[in-house]
Length: 408
Image (cartoon, rainbow, N blue to C red; front, side, top):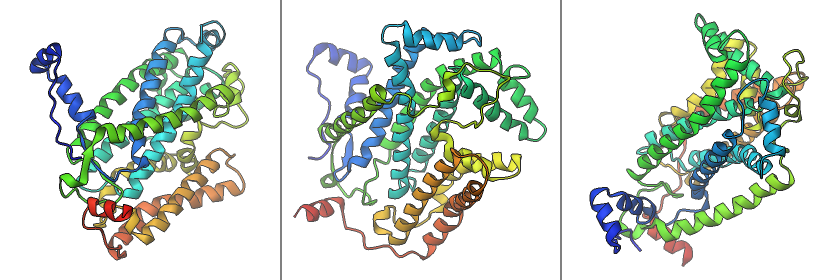
């Protein structure tokens, strides 16, 4: 079926509204009749899963904010109040805390899918960049949210991470003072972080709308990485892909609720159940698991300023990816050498995650430095070279031909 259905409402009220404010036509074109390549697989459902997890975080966050007190003397107690006294407060808090981890899991898979299938290449460069902006906003939101319970790891994590900005020449000290709202991490810091943590999810939602808008201009990429040749290569988003998305949401909820009900603290840190104490430093300060690769890159560089630059460069290099990888073939399916290096990149990121959670001593320092070097080498050296020398396998003539040949 080709995506040619027009919106013709039968309800008089819907017709009247849509003539003056065509919101129903917009929703129909976006969620129902949006033409999508007919060969999209389940990896393309992770964008919808990310939107679903964002909705979960916003809803639970709004309710939790009704009971939370952003004051250093009451924040920890207010979280315990939510857990013990608020009806189903424990469930809301565990859904919100574990929801952050699952949000990052879904987004990391979404990013790596884009890396493999070349979704960052023309004509989707801006779409890719908007996705990275969402990722950066997610990291800022998650970091500020981790500070709010005001446990030991919250306080010392905020102290360590905000102090990184002091490495910036000339203005570093002023930036840290601005973040703190004073001369140490204290009540003004907590108020700033609470305010921004509440605001940023709505900014993420706004950028997500732009992300979807940018997606609908060139259309979705596909596993073959070839352009749509005509209506025979497309199907309507609904019901074909909504069925896939609903199945993936159901599957996600099985694992998500498994953590919420049976291992709610597995992805957290036990030190955060100790009230913040500025006079007692934890033995090993670590951020949440989804920050560990970048934390490992930060620690792998001996110089503080260069470490901060390397940490931010690890994300910023992804913005340049459309121009670093100039190979004409998008999909890694037809690039055998690229596919091998892609697997190495995934292994490298896993190694960085492990190293980030270990003390910066002994062999772990060397392993972190090697993994950091390979991470940047993959994007700055390997991909540009492969763009020039790699010979890809022949591409199919069209999506429909590939689909029909596969099922013949």
